[in-house]
Image 1 (cartoon, rainbow, N blue to C red):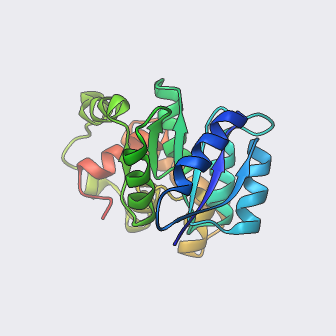
Image 2 (cartoon, helix red, strand yellow; image 1 turned 135 degrees about the horizontal axis):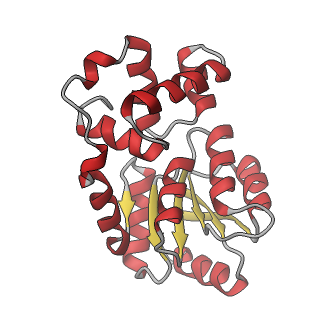
Length: 213
């Protein structure tokens, strides 16, 4: 049984999602949240398998709520569900640790499939925004020279690999048994060496050059 937490600021949407998922065998709605702070609180209380998160939430944005949930509950998957297609929402959600990104209005069958896939460790991105990801990856401005791998020391490659997997600085620090401040320093150094200014572009470079495995 996949345990799901629903998070949306509109009651009609919350109830609609509850009704849709209530008819899906193998899915159990364990709670609903009307704002980001409540989403974090209920996630800690119920320990769901998947959080369906609206990004435009009051009190605490869905992006920040996603980040806090992923930092505190590393096994919980967050599937962003929103009306927004703008780049900043897409990449902020990914940087915060979202495992997928769907637009509201997604057909029932696709929504259920996305939840099941997210639970199984797959990544779902709405076709309407997937193009933005491919364009970002294909952007020639993020292609480094062929000496990239050799320019990074072993620890920098470790940090980049974990960053590309969506881990936060705190999670990377825990995984590598280092302080969070040390990881921040490594990330800053990586940005400088890769010629980027954010985690998404760093992750894209890692993926393109086989440094995320």
